[in-house]
Length: 68
Image (cartoon, rainbow, N blue to C red; front, top):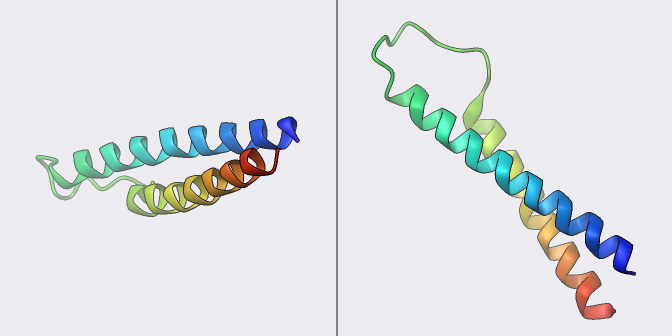
């Protein structure tokens, strides 16, 4: 059971890091000086989906932690 908890915890941590990175990049994009210099990465979507994966992985980690 510890291996499942560790996997979920790692995924949750990495997803949280990606969500924060996406949020900061989206914030930077919204404050850019040249409004026509649009990038190709949808940072808002990256941040949203990374947050969803992180929340679900954290819930799974808590579930495995409570079982063991």
